[in-house]
Every structure is written in C-alpha cells, then in structure tokens.
Image 1 (cartoon, rainbow, N blue to C red):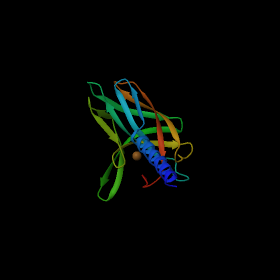
Image 2: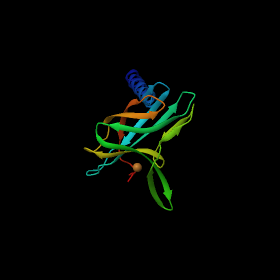
Image 3: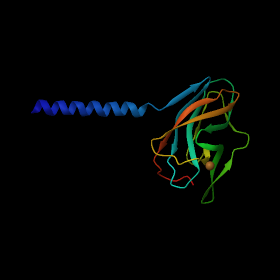
Image 4: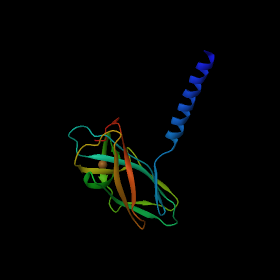
Length: 157
Ligand SMILES: [Cu+2]
C-alpha cells in the first residue's frame, strides 16, 4: 500500500513538474534581428468583429526598427493602436508612422498600451485557437507568428 501511494505521488510530482516547465516556455519567433515572444489575443464575444493582438517584440540588432503593420488571414485589416486613459475613459488612437523599437530593446504590446487591432474579423476568435499572423517592420524582415487566443477575461472594447 505504501509503495502504491509513493508511486502515485511520484507520478503526480512528475506531471506538475512537466506542466511547470511547459508554462515557462513562451512561444518565440525569430527572423533576422527581431524576436517576437508570447503573441496572444482574446476570444471575441458573438457578433463582435474586432479583436486585439498583444506580444513582446525584441530588437536584437544595433539600429532601431519601426513596427508598421501586420496581417492575418482572418481579418480585413490590422491597425496599430495605443490605448490611454482620458479621465475615467479608456480611449485609443491610431499610431501614426509606426512604433519605433530601439536597438537592443523590447517593446511590449499589452492591454492598456500599444496593441494591434484586428479589424473586420471574418468570424470570431475562439479560445485556444491559433491564428497565423505576419508582422511588418521598416528596416527589418517580416516575422511570421501564431497568435494564441485566450479566454475573454476583461473586455477590450
Ligand atoms: Cu484598438
């Protein structure tokens, strides 16, 4: 009996360790000097035709590059936005001229800050879905990534 309990405990421990290791490995995509880490999105409620995309973008080169645009097969258009608080209201605006990523630095697109707006979604984003996306830069090659769609949580719009 003791032997069985010990065996079960050992299996559980191994499983937890395996999950822990998996969670620490964020998705990472590198093309030339650019590395994009942990690109993600949120599932969209029924009838909503806009989504978001967040990610960390690292410039490993020694000159600044500019994030300008992106596209996916599921959207009519993708635009780069910045959210900001306007009094008590969260507003967002189109980022004119792209977003500069200085040499050796990481810029994060995240809730409440910069984000890609997925416009004119042809169907909703579903949790656990993975969406192919291409991210475009000035002065760097495009990077192909896969957005991981997470559960809704707080709503963007
Ligand atoms: Cu937006």
